[in-house]
Image 1 (cartoon, rainbow, N blue to C red):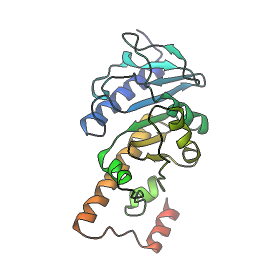
Image 2: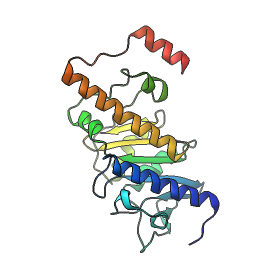
Image 3: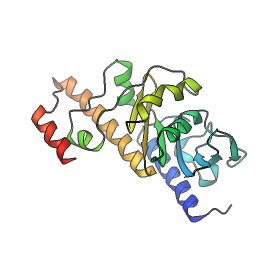
Length: 214
């Protein structure tokens, strides 16, 4: 199948990021979903029920902003059942070009324990991400799941889903990936710090300097 250069690159980027997520244990089995905005009327999204670690460019599905299938994936694959969450992110953020949803274990563990994301322990998080809110509990793949992120995704590039995972957005697929990887790293550092002793936030004056620099 032949696509335009831009679509080809987006398909390859989503396949690459899916492989990274799977290889690094940020998704397991057939979990997680990824998408990219092709244009105002089309969204490229990963197929339902397939491992993100073994995708091919032709597996990806093209949908419209209402979730209707424009072009199925290989073998008549249908879009991820969590497409409403992706569509909602694009509706709320015209600047966004990609949406990633994964289940990074350290990050999910924070939500299971009811611990807010530690946004103030690492300079790179303060400067590169900022606050990371946690949405209310919602059933995965439901319309309510999309509604749960609505108020947060307008102002934040990442939202935690309690007992579930994380959603990150970016202008590009790579940008959304960097945010997701950084969130999991921060969650891991926080939990290791708690094992060793106290997880201390950065001093207020240092935080202020970072915000000014960022």
